[in-house]
Amino acid sequence: MRQRDFENRHRDSWAQLEAWLKNDHHSAEVAALDLPAAYRELCQQLAVAKERQYTNRLIDHLNQLVTAAHHRVYRQQTLRRKGWLHYLLAGFPRAVRANGRVVALASALFLLPALVMGIGTYNNDALIYAMMSPGDVLSLESMYDPGNRVLGRERGSDTDLAMFGFYIKNNIGIAFRTFAGGILFGLGSIFFLVFNGLYLGAVFGHITRVGFVSTFYPFVIGHGAFELTAIVLAGAAGLLLGRSLVDPGQHRRSVALRLASVEAMKIMYGTFLMLVIAAFLEAFWSSSAATPIAIKLGFGALLWLLVFAYFALAGRGESRHAS
Image 1 (spheres, one colour):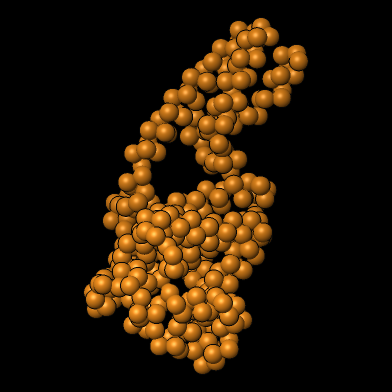
Image 2: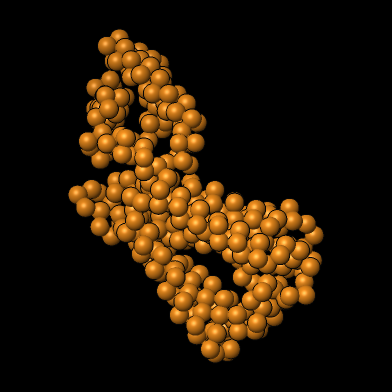
C-alpha cells in the first residue's frame, strides 16, 4: 500500500483520536471512542509505517500520537482503579437517579404483574400451576416448611458455601438475561421483567395461602432488598439499550447503542455487586431457622431502608458541590 492510500485509509481514525486527546467530547463519535482499542490499532499502524519506510513526517506524527495515547490509557487505568470507591459511594446511585424514569418503568413492569399474580394466586389455588409444575409446587412448599432446620434451599444441599455459589450463578444469570434482552429493542427486558414479576407474585401468593408466612417472609425480606432491586435495575439498564435502538435521535443506531451501553453499564456494575451481597445473605443469613423471626424481620426492614436511602441520598452532596 502506498503512503498516500495508507494515510487516506486511517486519517479519520487519527483525527478522532486527536480530538479525544484534546478533550473535545462534543461529537458523539468522539465520546464513544474506545481508547484502548484505538491505542492498540495506532501501535500496529506505526509498526507498519516503519516497516514500509514511510516518510519521517508520518512516522513522527504517529509516534507523537502513540506517546500521548499511551499516557492517557494508563492514566485512565489508574483513575479507574481509584474510582471504584467513588463509584460505589456516588457514581452508582447517581446513575440510577439520572435514569429515574426508566427505573420507574422497569419497577412497574416488575411489580404490577407480581401484585396481580400474587392476589390471584392467593385467591385461586389452581393459578400457581400456570407458572410451575405440580412437582415444582411441592418442592417450593418443602423449602419453606416450618419444620425444616434450614430454609429456602433444596434438600441435599451440603454447605452454605456451596449454596452461596449457586445463588450467585442463579441471580446473575437472571439479571444478565434481563439486561441483555434489551438488545431486542427492549422487548427482551420487558419480557423478563414481567415474567419474573409474575413468577414472584405466584410464589408469594401461594406460600401465603398455604400458611408458611412465619418462615417465608423472614427468609426473603433480608436478601430481597438487594436481589429484587437488582433485577429491576438490570431491567432498567436493558431498557436503556432498547430505547437507543427504537429512538436513536440524531445518531446512527450503532453510535446510539454504544452511548447507551456506557450509561447502562454504570448501573450494571453496581447491580452485579448487589447480587453478590444478596447471594451471601441468602446462603448464610436467610437460610438459618435458628435466628428469631423478629430479628430477621427487623434486620430485613433495616436493609430495605438502607437500600432506598442509598439510592435516594448517596452522592447528592458531591453533586451540589460540583455544581
